[in-house]
Structure formats: C-alpha cells, structure tokens
Length: 98
Image 1: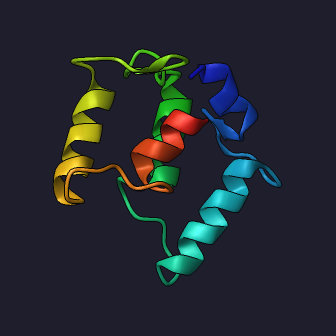
Image 2: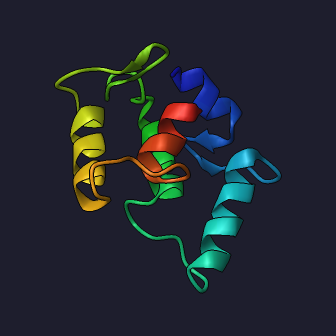
C-alpha cells in the first residue's frame, strides 16, 4: 500500500477531500453509526495515516501486512475479536485494500 494511494483516495494532511472516495467512506460510516465517525474505524484510521504519510511504515504494503508491524498488531487484535478471522469491510481489510 502506498501513501500516494491513500492521498489519491482523498485522505490528506488538510483533511478529507470533498467528492472523494474518502468522503463517500466517511458519509457511509457516519450514516451507519447514527451520525458520527468512530475513532479507530476505517475512515479515522486512514485519515490519520494519510495525514502522517505513514501507511507503508505502519506495515501495510503492496505485498501484504508486514510481520511484527503496527498493521500486524491491528490484524491480530481484529482477528481475536472476530473468532480468528479478519472481516471484510473492517478497518484492517479496508486499509490494506487501498
């Protein structure tokens, strides 16, 4: 995963770009949760990483999640709380897919 892809999706250091994939994700997530975007959710996580240009250094790479990285810790916690699997559409899966 490249920081450039996150930026192209609309997650920038100055916020989420209007009309972008990021904007649509934020809107969908806010509607699903009754009006807010949850801390630690896909949109919030991508925005932090996009602002810091840190997706690759966090362990989300083109060839998958790096062993021993922050991303692998996120994946492990997610799998532990979902019966051993990482659900599609969840934060880890979404960040990795972008």
